[in-house]
Length: 257
Length: 329
Image 1 (cartoon, rainbow over the protein chains, first blue to last red):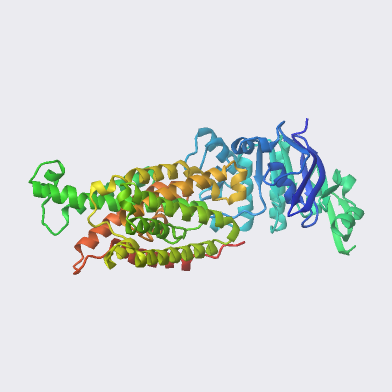
Image 2: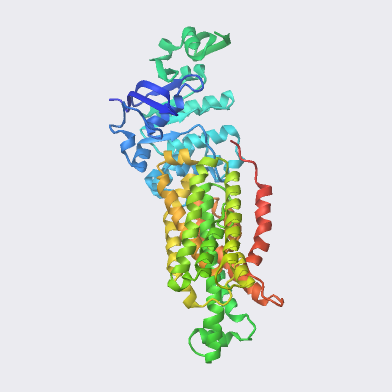
């Protein structure tokens, strides 16, 4: 039984079809990475699942219900969402940002009950943030901050996690750390749908890659099945060498296709 | 310091300040006479001084400050900017415009509720306009400029109304509305407005948890389960009611809604929800103290409370602007 089931949805923004006829399934324990060039519709797909943009037809179910039909808090108890833009308005503490992940359970930084407090501690520990818990977020490095935001999304302990470019602007080690956290989250029996730009990183961690181009899913399968030089040319318009290496992948881009 | 001890400390100091406000004034009254008058004893003259002059004035200053402090803290949380405040955003000025309209066109005789209602309608018009404009203008600095423009425009309309008014008016009346004062307020003056002010505060407090979620930005706040339209409605309505009521009592008093939350924020780990209650208390305390200052200042004519508030608040406003790091994105 799929945790997330997207069936033939479309999205039109400013009279332009930005998503057409998109179908995608993801099961518990599975990490699916959405790959595609800028403007292909990856972010719109995540927002359409949540109901933050209007869909034209098709259907989405998460845990059996259409997220759009659920009240905001109930939806947030089933789907956690980490958007690409993560502005923090105030220099709040790390612990308080993670506590906001429990918002849909009735918690907030100033009101953190026993179970929510325990979840926050557990998530801080899982994301290696215990030493930073009392620090103000405006004193953190980019890599630390990205872990804080991911911890916020994970603290909701939802069966489904939607993450938009969690590794953007991170160095290789921090990219690896973030992906390992997401992998662990999926391995715990949850379902993660992740937007990434790095094909090699995606192939290293994902169970499946869903390739989006021009608002359509053009391929969906395991890295072995779908990560090919032809696909890199078709989707990204680049000439690339693709090689499976021990413990990972190398994708070397040499120029436009 | 825990939230509870911060609130206790502020409440304690506020009570001391209210007591001090009863002691200070042109008629020298000792502590014993004031206490006795408060308890209903003492001479009739003492009771008039305490119950009809000093205490209502101090309570008015506190209520106005609390309304502006809570409105400022809530607007800052909603708009995610420490400069958002009823005075800066033009909410106070539009409320003053509504109040002036009622007074100078003789509508105040329509009933005790006409004045507070007009001020509240003016304030609500501004909060609705600003929150509707907020998503469109994108940058918060632009939104502040919209507020500054709104403030100037409402001020100009207020002056125009006074020029065209069929009833005679004095320059000092105009100054009272534009600068703000709590001189000569009685409990009977406060009574019709107080319920609106209290309702505004209750509504602001009902929506405060959502302000914490907005720390993450609107997109992520929606993701953690915030009903953003509801939070927006509560802040718009609560700030409109509280600010409108405050202006109906005292005219437009600026900056206290910036200064109090700014001082409180580091003490509550910058959580917007927890900023609300201490900001209300501190802003009330600041105005009670400023009003004592106004009364004891050795000037020929009494200073306006709003002038003192601006003298203290405007430098803090400039300092926040100057010290603020340019937000990314």
